[in-house]
Image 1 (tube, one colour):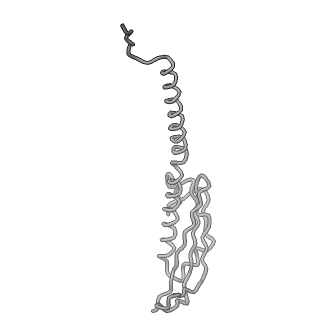
Image 2 (tube, one colour):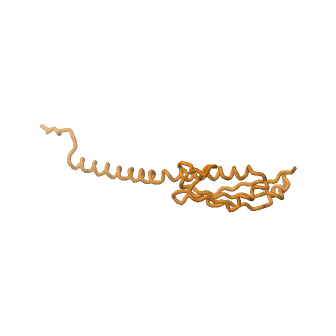
Image 3 (cartoon, one colour):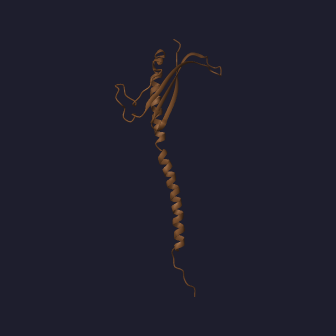
Length: 144
């Protein structure tokens, strides 16, 4: 007669299973750690981009002659509203620099005439975690 084997796992099988599960768990936790560590970085850059876009829009909506007044503009101590009150959540963002340069815009395809009077506006916004976002736009003098 054959001896019947009982159901279940042997001690060796259990030790191997624990080792395999532990190795897999370590790998998964390592991936989670890297994802969590860098998950805020895109949010910081996105917020800095929003601040730069708002500043650039404000400058480009000015009259052509008034755009130069923003050359050299910068902030320190966070972004503030028109009454100089700090805006919640933007205390660690600053407009690092604004530069305005006069330039000529040429159409290399030859379809459009060259624009002799244009101003190139560059806004650089810095934020937490060494985030720096440069943004450029052009203000053109339109024919009267």
